[in-house]
Image (tube, rainbow, N blue to C red; front, side, top):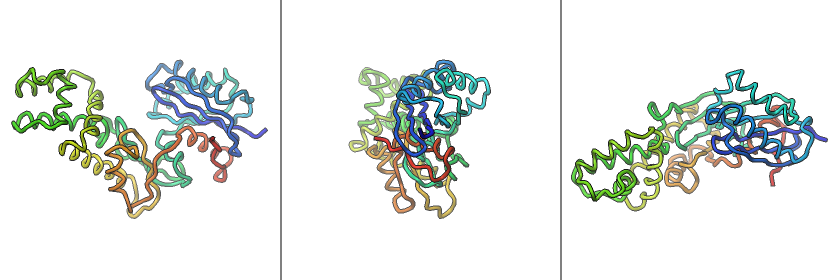
Amino acid sequence: MTDLVVGVDTGATSTRALAAGVDGRFVGRGASGGGNPNSHPPEVAAGRVAEAIHSALAGADPALVTACLLGVAGRSKFTDPAVLEVFHAALHRIGLTCPITIRSDAEVAFASATDSPDGTALIGGTGSVAVRIVNHRETLQYGGWGWLLGDEGSAFWLGREAIRATLRQLVSGEPLGTLATAVLTEALGDPSAADRHQAMQLLITSANAEPPIRLARYGTMVSAQVAADPVAADIVRRAAELLAEHAFAARTPGERTPIVLTGSVIGPTSPVGIALRADLAGKAEVLSAADAVAGAAWLAALEVAGPTAPRPLVP
């Protein structure tokens, strides 16, 4: 039997695993609940990762697994030896004895979309970050500094801008657009029950009463109103420009390597994603991240078999 590798996409809400031979032969897939120890107790997270891997092996001998690679957002948690030991113990219980490699979600996303060893991964989801990839490894990060210091162009940023635009309209006395109406309805329930000054105060109070990241939900309203409201269209345009700036800040001058986009805000059919692709057109090959777990499995194979390792033949 060919040696096996396992790749894992370790998320906060779900965990997916893929087992394959180092020759690219597909073995199986598995899934479980959230396995990121930033979001769950390490023992719970590790158990879910083990569950997903066990399913992916589909009865194959776990002793044949020579590499297990976990793609994780916020991988710094694994710098704690105690956390890493919890994961090793969980995998040992299902028969895996190979070491665990931890790689960033950006590295995995990039590998899912291209065979190029070098380029840029741009993540636009609840937060935002651009990452330079060299020889399949993250070497520089631009952004990813959290809601207080950055996250430009992210769902959080879109939501905050939607609220700020609504406040400006309330103060100015100009007619409320469809975006402002949607924001006030979400925050106040019935915006017609308050005059403009009251609505402004209530919106400020509502926004500040929640964890800041909750503002991301208003970002979906920006996307929904982009065709109907020039204010929403302007927010989308500025988001795309900021994300493009992130991407180029993570690259060397004149670099022509691929840029891989991933995240709900910059999907191929999302308004920000469409505008961003237009801003990047002609400056680099722009790709969308594909199956992250397949990217993780391929990175695991590269560690075992070197640069000639084929991608898993995923059905």
